[in-house]
Image 1 (cartoon, rainbow, N blue to C red):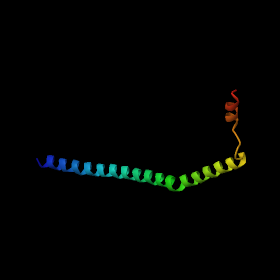
Image 2: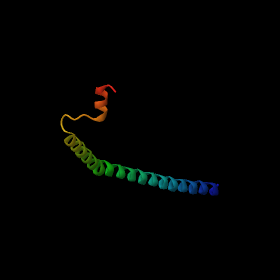
Image 3: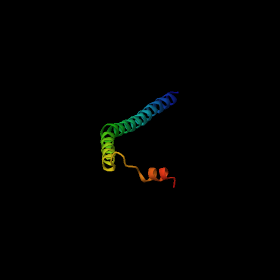
Image 4: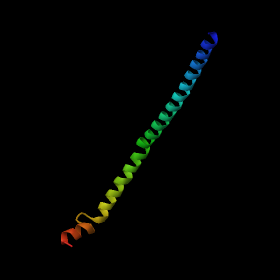
Length: 79
């Protein structure tokens, strides 16, 4: 009887330790994922947006105000 109770106690303690380790690993992975997402959202995306905006402005300046693209010109001419 005492042996059975001690076995149950040992299994309970082992179960608690295993669940604690698993939850710690899951928490670390979630924290790492949130850190990477935050870095991308607050550091990388603004730089990419500024670069995209600058490229759009430069393309518009180089083309001129009334310039048509080759696809637009072909569509207007009906070819």
